[in-house]
Length: 307
Image 1 (cartoon, helix red, strand yellow):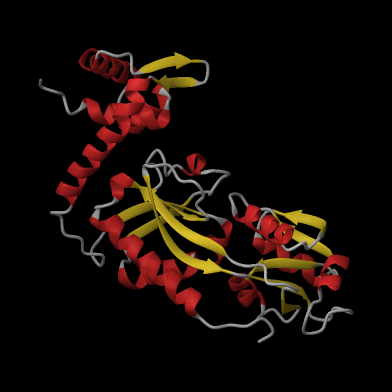
Image 2: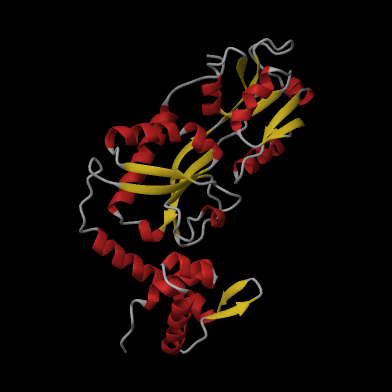
């Protein structure tokens, strides 16, 4: 039986978008053209494949079974074609959309941008919000090249690479009347705290760490980004519990003082994830390698709170 291979990307895009309008926009075709392609797919597969419901197009059981097979086949074709192409970062003229969480944007992205300026000045980055889950980042639909942060329960069509592990420390104002070079559990629980509530899973990790160690915390104010913390801490007697590499940056601020957490709060992972279709793309593969190198170098810098 002969198949029209042009129909397969339509199927994959509909599976990922579950919406005819968004799928047509992503494929660069009109809605009638996409509807026509879907009709031909239904004839070939002898199945409705997608059923229109209130909140979009829902796949049938056959579509769910076909999806991983077709996605793997298309990824293999992409890999075979792209694997024959050479990539020269110094001559590349490309743009990548990346979704870093607020931690990665603060700690890693400046070093990544500096490395790109040296080795691939023609590569441009567009940062998009991490969002509350992976679907919001665009990495599932392919509009975003990769996502960086804490990746929990990724779907089968995402490849996840572990980059580094990060710990936690505390920051108070330099002339805090009660805190010297250390912070006891009793002091920590007696103080009021600035809480960072970023998008994504980072906030979940801190809440779980505190709960598991029986450490209570009275939150006085919650902010949405790490950049708001130093200004809050500098004018109050509050405390903030932050990733160690962010604390290392804040240690240069004479208004602030970094101290170890009163108990070991463990660590949280930082991961890189991308759609399986990009696995063998030479440019994408090169950028992933650069990001992994930068993350390793940044995380290997030795630093102890109080230094």
